[in-house]
Length: 202
Image (cartoon, rainbow, N blue to C red):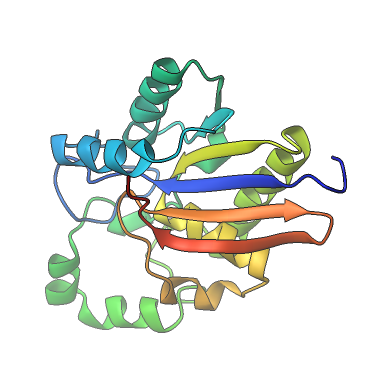
């Protein structure tokens, strides 16, 4: 990478899936709803200089990523380690269901998501390590390019933590909306956050 160049990585959260709001880790693989497709088309319409699309293998990301790459004639890389964090016993459960049936467990998770994982959930530190490895791979493999990375809220939170050196206990204090973009830049000063939870407009 030339000292004058920077690598831009736009991490796009998938749109709304079929089934509405519920905990989907890497054990629930719902496709996008029609509204979710429209959300993602709207968020990507204003940016036309991506040089590659990188995607989670999960349907709510990959189906749109494949469509966009084909539409724009861009290469597509599927990264298995961009899959969402595993939520164990919470997979497929709605927030209201958890608030009603497991209120103490739900509240404890948001106070300290590292030490109060749902039963069988992926450890947050291990999840953070795998998404950090993907980020470091991308900035090396695509130095000087502008990438679209189609992924999940947890992946964005973990990458945010990696770039800003924020510990995992703080990651769920960050909002990540459906079809919103978080932009990271890597240059000679290293990696930094440029924009978060952003929806570009035409």
